Length: 488
Ligand code: NDP
Ligand code: HEM
Image (cartoon, rainbow, N blue to C red; front, side, top):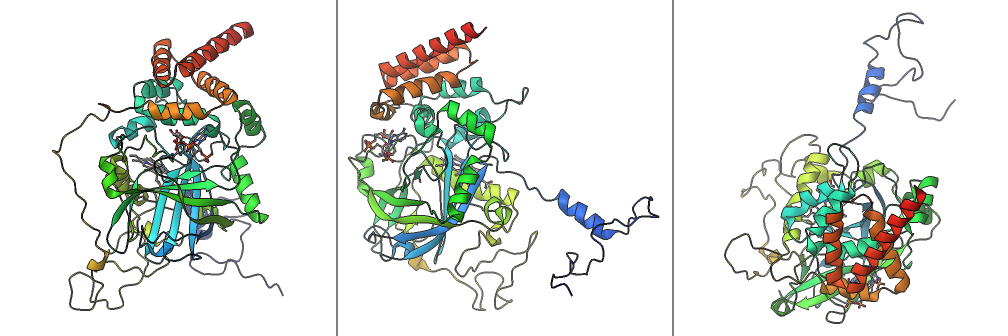
């Protein structure tokens, strides 16, 4: 007798035949009463959910954070409580612009989203492999993303839209320079750094606030492809990053990162020559050195990619006691945007899905809605708050210290008096001659077909970063034009 379990319908009834649809006669039409056929087709029609509006293509795995140094002077967060402490985590990496089926080896920012399952709730650090971003005001996010996605008429990606927007937005120069540098096209995600990018806050047991930036330094080293190498890779496989990450973990070659922080005393924010809450700026290491926190290791692949990676929902709004927000306007907008996206993409109770469910008790008064499946409170009479039935109640011990803010509500011009050039210049100066040549070539390649006035406007921005930058791009553009002419 077979030891295989009997196939059933989703209602648990045994299925007698899973090969032949029920028909009127051997050649006849199928019968409406073949509800097993209808169930299979109906389920299939619902196998896809909307893809993420950005960062649709992704790769993920589970692992741990092991604390290696004592940072309790800065934060009372339980996951940092003692050296040696381990916390489970999930990382989902991604590209930003491509759709779910996009090729992996594309020049694009890599998402680096980490969910720490702490004993006081989930902490999501939803960062990128870059320390800065293209814009500093969230008002521009939908416009920026439109330039990265498809043109409404041609349905093609549009270099004209990208460079038009960037050349009109000098705050993008820092991130554009990183994107067009070697690190803009990593071979995979084991060989990238991760950055929380925004400034967040840490709060210690004494109620002191510090500003903080988070860095994940790859212990695998950096690896990248040239555009030409990447084209050959995409010709061979569109899934190079998935293959690399999945196979490394299957083979026990676990990727690791050093989690570090930069810490700024609360009062310093008034003194830095740059706005420390501006997402287009880094804090120079010379001013705020890296402090090691621990080691992140990825050591387990998902068993079900859809359930555990595609349905993972990360949100910058998920912080835990001892870790908080900052006035960064971009962060503030993201605190709203992600949970809103999850309710649309995954449904009301997305937080209760196994991959998103906190590994600590959860007590709230949300009720009902689609797919409501979790149990009532232990006392079902306590379904509102305040109540006299021992329902969960607030605990003022978790209050954050008040944050001083001031100023008139207005729409302030974020470009006025803002230096968009010094930090890209510091980056440009780090590049050796060969790196600069590849940067110039990558920019010129990405500008193919862009109208001359937009190219010139962008080159004038490069001139202001460094005269060699503007000159180098112009020379690369001229060389590309000569090569195109020769090929005609
Ligand atoms: P440092 O010399 O102390 O640090 C330079 C940093 O640049 C390192 O973190 C290095 O990362 C990183 N880096 C090197 N090449 C690239 C590249 N192609 N793309 C992106 N990052 C790269 O200098 P400062 O702290 O004074 O910063 C100088 C410039 O370095 C900044 O303007 C910024 O553009 C860039 N940078 C600074 C960071 C910061 O937090 N201060 C973080 C990342 C970049 P690694 O150590 O992994 O090699
Ligand atoms: C994904 C909005 C800026 C990193 C997303 C999603 C939205 C969004 C709606 C899809 C979420 C989902 O469906 O699961 C925004 C807005 C921004 C912004 C409104 C600015 C105002 C940023 C910045 C970073 C970033 C600055 C990095 C520092 C990511 C990552 C993902 C993502 C990594 C994918 C998360 C995952 O793997 O599921 N963003 N974003 N975003 N965003 Fe942003």
